[in-house]
Length: 138
Image 1 (cartoon, helix red, strand yellow):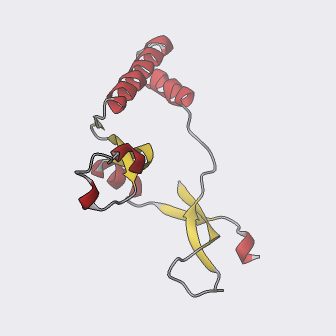
Image 2: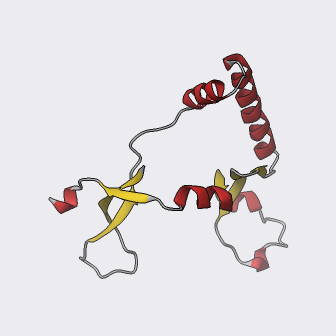
Image 3: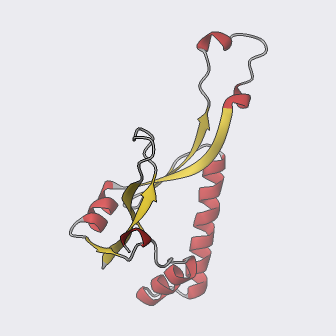
């Protein structure tokens, strides 16, 4: 299988004014749903569909609980799922003041995923790429 990509327009924040830039970006043609994963696990094992659904559902619930408690979730051989907070920078001198509200400097929160080195190695070793048609190359 090949990883599909196409050439798209992009901005270069350090680039010259009035110059158009282009770059290669991976393009997702299809998605792989939880239902498809459940079917594949059921087919490849002696477990029933109900058992697999119960395990996957319980796993999702435990992951949500851990992330909501600020914990990282490490799935060996798969990767790490972690909560993060992004905020504005502020002068350290304002921290000890009575009016300092740290929460007012939070811009966003989210959930990140970092694949394990084994997962990256297995997926990216010997991969090929396939260029899709792009409006920029017409």
